[in-house]
Length: 73
Image (tube, rainbow, N blue to C red; front, side, top):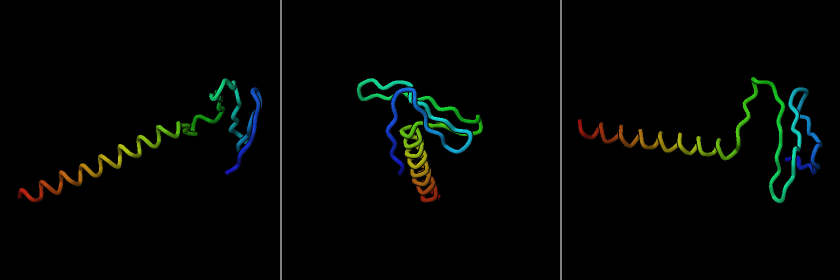
C-alpha cells in the first residue's frame, strides 16, 4: 500500500487518466474529487462490502431453500 500525505487542493495521479484531488479537510473528514473515464467504476468501499455480504447471504439462503425442496420430493 502506498501512503501519501496531501493538503487541500493537491492531487494524486493514477495512470494517465485518473486524478484524485483533495477538496477539503475538516476535522476527521476529507472530501475528495475523482476524475476518471466513464468506463471506470468508482464505488465506496463500504458499499462494495455490503453488496458482497448481501450476495453471499442470498446464495446461502438459496442453497438452503433448494436443499429443503429436494428433501420434500
